[in-house]
Length: 479
Image (cartoon, rainbow, N blue to C red; front, side, top):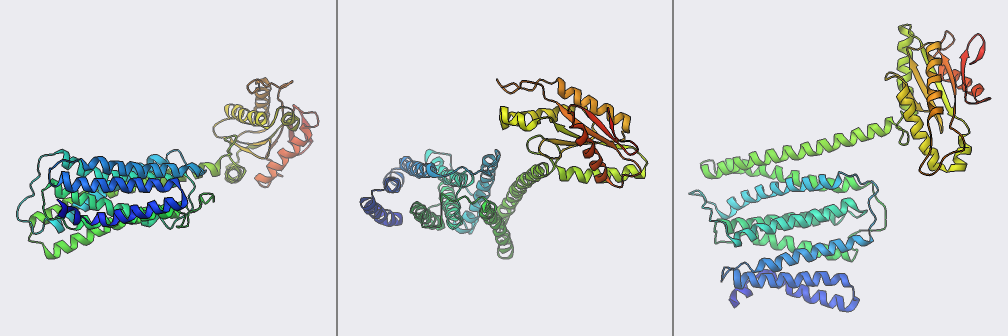
């Protein structure tokens, strides 16, 4: 038993590390260092229990201490978020997408680990592997890679949710957890198939664990370029693109493994069948992962397109997008000799309304006024927010009479609506002035039509709550 403890390489790292952490705590009195010290103690106890109770007495008591080790690191990461700012660019779906990708990546790592296990620990293969009945020891062995990825997932989640500008530690820390996960998978497979010769799994687990602890300690001491007070949203895509590159590299590694096995072990049918089956699984997971990323990309593009087309407050078309539509429609109307009209609408005494009831009430009026207009006009009509409280409406297929009727319908609907927000209510109704124009021989383009409607609006506002129509012969015609 004592010889087994002496031969445990991890203890040669954990014990000096514990002494180092205690010395650091004594000098700095930093309570965060206690997280690392407690985690180190749990890991030492777990290793001792693994050597004494698991290997000798076949009792998986070590899992209790190893689980406590993961919980302690999780609490450290959670405590780290207290002084972080929430990422203002965060979307509601970000956390769900992150965890879904991590689940897929987890199974990719599991499949590759199985291939590594077959090549290093079970070669040469002469018979199918014998799977022993599931026991508490085997179950606990497979929980370790799960805990590795949960810890990694929470770290990635923190970097997504909160503003963390540093990029130096993200890639090596993620890589260290992936290496540690592969090592834990190899040890779990060795336990499942009862392989007595422990090989590369121990080394990968040791390397990943040591690197993880060192990086977390450096993050704690802010020696990796992290600045928790600096807003750096623009680097988010670049920073998290590294993880996708690593996972894709693992898939490429499979291709290398397959070509190597095909060249050297083509006669080993059991090995080649395992490699091919693993390739099918990796292909399915890679397609699923890529489709998830493509869906997220398409959703983001749809959101950007919507933001570019519509006004954030009113939901109406933006001026730029509406002008592009108007130009095309105006040219088509001239070609097919179809009448086209335009309305320019302005809220009467809107500045006084804002000064009296506040800008939130003014926004409330703009939102509901836009909805009223959208409910009145046709589906082929174009409406956009022209200015602050000015709204432009393009009416394809409507002549002067139809345009006047539409303008009056809009004005009456707005005048009849009871605008009030919570307990606030204006002393008088909200009214609008509308200027209209129909394209004639003197109208050369859509901008001329807009200018004519704007000129009519200028005269409409002389008496307010009126509709005026531009006439080439009579100037401004009062209605």
